[in-house]
Image (cartoon, rainbow, N blue to C red):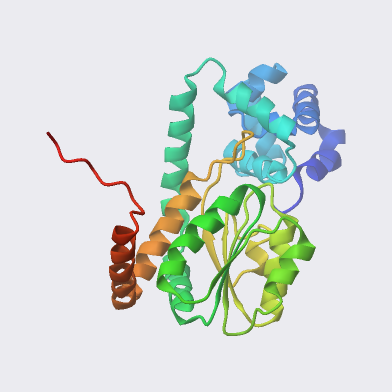
Length: 289
């Protein structure tokens, strides 16, 4: 179903039973919390049975509650404010151990990402980068560290790598003004999606550049403006965005590119190792006594 869930609720409201009206009212007023409840917890919160929740989902046209839940989650991905994120995160964690909850959540996002990644798109992205004249890496706000991390390693492999972490569209375009058809743009965008990154990617495609988008869904604003979409799950239900899965996918990309740039990379690091040694870039381990 492509209709917004709130619109569906509005259309079907006249036919709802008493229990369904309670569910519809709660979802409408507290969608940010309802989207991440099980059928059982949603029923208990509203005061109806779990079976009523499941039948309600079917009544709305979904195959079952999991499908309706996904629709609710998709609806709120880019609507949650920072305050709402904190409230939902607190509700989810409750009295559970914070470390265990967060690490288990990250592990689940990694598992989901392993299943989601389109291997053909990944291989095509690798080849596009290897053939690029210039490589631009875009990432604003909370995902700027991802852009810096990838850019750091790409700079060892390629001669012209440009990291763009501008937070505003104006500054973004100033740094992308020389993008051309022979270039590749790697962009990162996860909820809440940065408008500057999306506009930058959109502009780059008009120049003929190849855009590789790291995002959470094909239908995200960045996904719709990318030639190759590399999907990674990002948990946005907290003040801090979980970037464990996107970072792991970046690691995979770096490893694949390193394999493709074997000899060049070996020569670069051979020179670097001598420079690092001469100028004491890294601390040396003291000899054991």
